[in-house]
Amino acid sequence: MFSARLIPDSLLAQRYEPVLAGRDEFISFQTLAEVLYGAQLRNWGAARLRRLEATVAKTEVVHSGDELIREYVNFRVACERIGHALHQREHDADRWIAATAIRLGIPLVSNDGIFEDAPGLQWITVSA
Figure 1 (cartoon, one colour):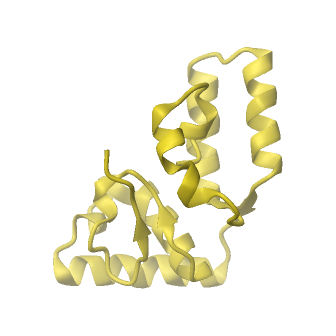
Figure 2 (cartoon, one colour; figure 1 turned 90 degrees about the vertical axis):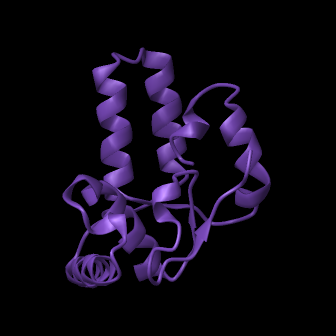
Figure 3 (cartoon, one colour; figure 1 turned 90 degrees about the horizontal axis):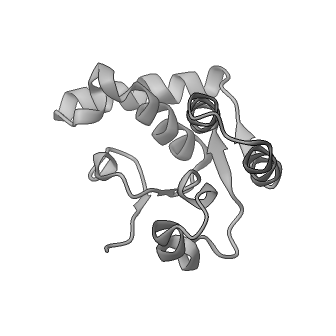
């Protein structure tokens, strides 16, 4: 949801606003890396980059460390043992994001169905 809120008049962000209102916001270092990559790749202008920086400044970025790394490993093993797609290599970024939420003991708010039924993950999504 973090990236959707960076798009002016995003209908997806509007759908999730009631879920996010009044909550502290955290993002994984992985989410920030993906957003910065997209901004650079698409040559965002100065005004849009300032909005991104302002949004990031209001959000706590969770960086990796020993505990998060262990959570990531435990999560990937649990996913593989039950055959959940998140164990696959192409979902590396999604695993970091999920492991961050699990480590913090908070729900992951996302529109990405890959998180459905992920072991140990509280996932909040909003239907269209």
